[in-house]
Length: 77
Image 1 (tube, rainbow, N blue to C red):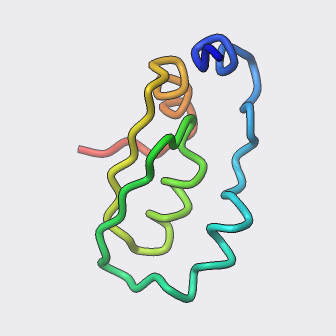
Image 2: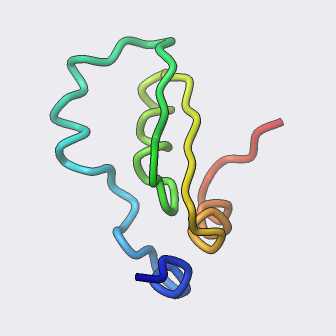
């Protein structure tokens, strides 16, 4: 499976809403926690985690997925 090919599209492959399972576990999260969002693709889960006041490191193997996330994430210094 080539993730770069899958992410090479005009819209977001999985949308922009976070994964439902992740949201259902929000009660386990506390503001300020550090979290690692593995295989975060275009960033939908990492963005949601950051919105929960968490310190997020998001990674993905797809350079296209990472590039796409730049189009809707707020810029950081």
